[in-house]
Image (cartoon, rainbow, N blue to C red; front, side):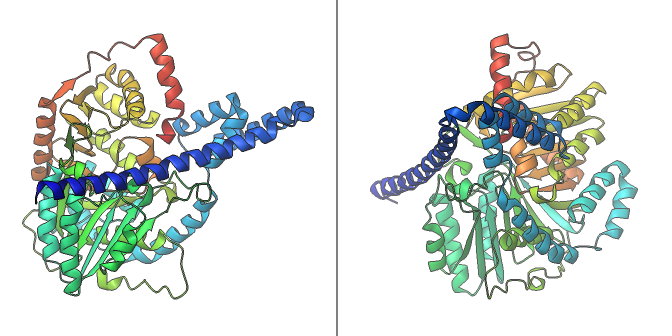
Length: 527
């Protein structure tokens, strides 16, 4: 590739990102304008100011009581309660715009309908596997049982797992497997950038389409808004690739911002699957460096466990849109082939999906269970650390009973305000014995945990409110000493390249800083 062509592609990439940023700015402006109009409408009625204030405070009180009675963690309730009681107009409007949404009920119904068809296709296939896991490790089997009962996703053996300590290694392996596809390719990602990395994938997909392979691509509109334009879907369809967008963002008309598709899944012929932390954008593979070096990880599955990733994809592909007349996209059996693959590894693998539609906190509960079952050590890595009281209690309790609990966060933030909130949680954790590291080379985007050289998780779930409560996520729980040791060694490599800040945050910050951070925490749910 010559220099001029490379520069042209870079300029095109910048133009697309600029277009996406313009959409975002317009969206923010539209929301601000809507709030301002409501505020002006109320404040211009001077003669009724007293009565309006009484009515507003009464409605705010009713709303607070409603929020307080919800079956959610107190960390989710209190920010809204404080905001609404302090600023009734602003707090109420923000809650209506962000805390609730009219589309949630309709979307929940679509997910319930599709799950009732898909999840039974996975049911009843892991009874013997569960018994073998119970015989091997009763404590670990408890986590697996929880996932199966609450998410509907079984635990498997006869599955080989390969761990990639760098996203670029995952991409290279993915490209090789995509070339081998014979029947179908499913790809679902929070963010896709129409750049160099995607071009390599796209070239393979186009060849596969020409060979008669069915290809589907699914992405989140908000996640990709800074990377691609709205013409991307048309481009994909023109190439013979079926493409859908989750929850297209239309300012004012569509205020359904809280629930985004944060999953990262590739499935090839129902036999090979990929998941992990990385999206399909150049920065994830260190082709660009907006925040220093980029650390991300992923896993490759081959064998019996792959159908769970297929089901997770089909759930979003079908439930993420409204039905239209003539839509007959429900022939799921052909995408769930019986696998005759014989695995080399003898571990246990359990891919699972987490949805904000069912009010179950699978991602958070798995993390809590990991640290509760650990007896020697439990390590976490996350780009954002905004945790609930329940998660904080589990982490600190484990440290108090002698478990070596460590958390890695970025050394260079991608969002400075979120980073400030992340650091506001350090003191409460380190004072009870948890060790915290910041990865100095740049931004760490991996989302993993590992415990006792036995079990680990790898997926898309951050340790923050967005991932744990609002986004559609997916993860993979693994009970396999070989994989756990590989992940633990990668953690040790990250520790060596990180700055430990445990001692620095063992003493609380200044009163002014504490006040600023506590105010930011009020908006942590939105970050």
